[in-house]
Image (cartoon, rainbow, N blue to C red; front, side, top):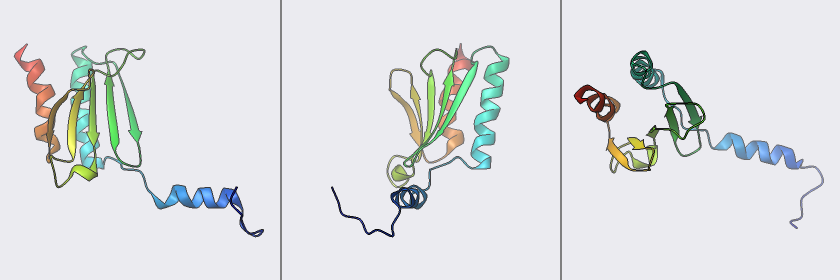
Length: 118
């Protein structure tokens, strides 16, 4: 066990740890683009549900065909990859990265084109 001074509350230390590392989020423009795509797919009957997770290292928008299934697509924003392959990626249900890039619109084209061809 570590020794702690009597005037430091352990819950305050944990709260300070949580506030020092803010979660990665989608900004308003990014969410608008993703939700526009989501709305079109819902209107076509392809998608039915979504989930948004804001984690410390990345933000994830998951798309479901049904609420009880695994996500068919995950749209991820990972700032650690900003100088490498690109901050945005679209990942399939099997874990395969379909596209990665620096611009969200270009990355989301992999989903738009797939349904347009069929």
